[in-house]
Length: 378
Ligand SMILES: *Cc1c(COP(=O)(O)O)cnc(C)c1O
Image 1: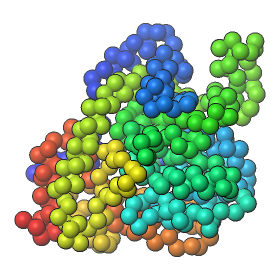
Image 2: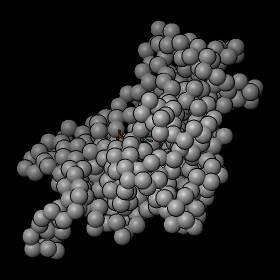
Image 3: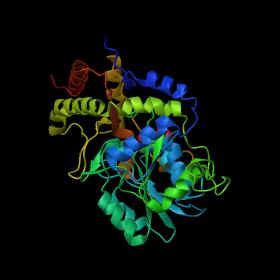
Image 4: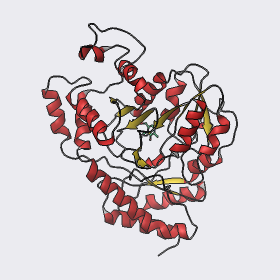
C-alpha cells in the first residue's frame, strides 16, 4: 500500500546553516540580520512598499486591524469560507463581521455580494485569495474607493501569485502572508505584513515593536524611545527569519515543482469534469495559479466522505477545508441569518489533494488513477 501524506514540509538544506549564522551574530531577537534580508527580498522581488515579518499571518492580521483603527461597532466584510484568523483579528478589536458568500466558480468572495452589505459603519473589506488564486480585485478596489473603505488582502496562501500582472499582496492598503508549514514557503510558524499605503508605514513599525518608537530610535530619528501607541510583540526572532531566508533562496524551484504537480492533477482529472462528475479549480483570466493547493469539488457531502475513505484505504491522505464561519459555534448567534449557499457548498464538497515539493510524479499518477477508479473510470 502507498503511504502518501497530505502535506510534507520541504527543507531546502540551508535552514540550519542560516540559523547557526543568526546565532553567531549574537543577536537572535527580532529585526536582526535575517529579518532585514527577508524583508528586502520581498521588497525587491515583488516591489512591496514596506514589509514587516511577523510571528504568523494571524499576527499580521491583528496588526492590520489595529492600523485600520477598528473600534467597537465598526463593520468588516469578509468571506465566510476562510480561516478564523481572517476575521478573528478584527473581532478582537470589537468589529462586527458581515459575511459575504463565495463565487460560483471559486471559493473567493463574490464581489456582486459585497455592495448590498456596505453601510456607513463598514470600515474594511478583507478579500482572501483562496488557493493562491486572486479575487476580483478591481471590483473590490472600486467599491472601496467609492465608499471610502480600506482593503486588507489576506494573502496567506498567495505568495508569488498575480492579479493582472500585479503581485498579490500589493493591491490592498495592507496585506498579510503566512509562512506556516502548510504554505508554499515556510518558517514553521511565521508571517508578514505588507504596508502598501505609506500613510500606515510609521505606525506599523510602532505597533510591531510593542507600541514603542524603537525602530525610529535605532535609525537615529528620535533621541529617546518610549511608549507612543498601542502594540504588541509581533516580530519573530531572527532564527525564524534565518529559516525563512533559506526557503526564499529556492522560491523559483519550489514554485516550479508545485505548479508542475498542480498541472499533472489538472490534466489527469479533467475527464471527470468534462463528464460532469466533479468540479476542478477555476483560474479566472485575471489570475495566476501559484501551485498552493489542488482541490476538487464533489457533488455532495456524502460523495466527498466516500471519496476520502476510498483514498484513505489506499494510503492517500486528503482533507476537506473550512467550515462556513457564519455557522461556527462562536459566530452563528452573531450572524444576521442570511444564507450563504456557495460557502456551505465548499464547506461540504471541497476536497484538497496532497501537494508538496517531494511528491513524485508517480505518486500523483497513483492518486489520479485512484480518483478515476472511484468515479468508474479505468
Ligand atoms: C494559513 C492561513 C491563515 C493563518 O496563517 P498563520 O500564519 O497560521 O497565522 C490565515 N488566513 C488564511 C486564508 C490562511 O490560509
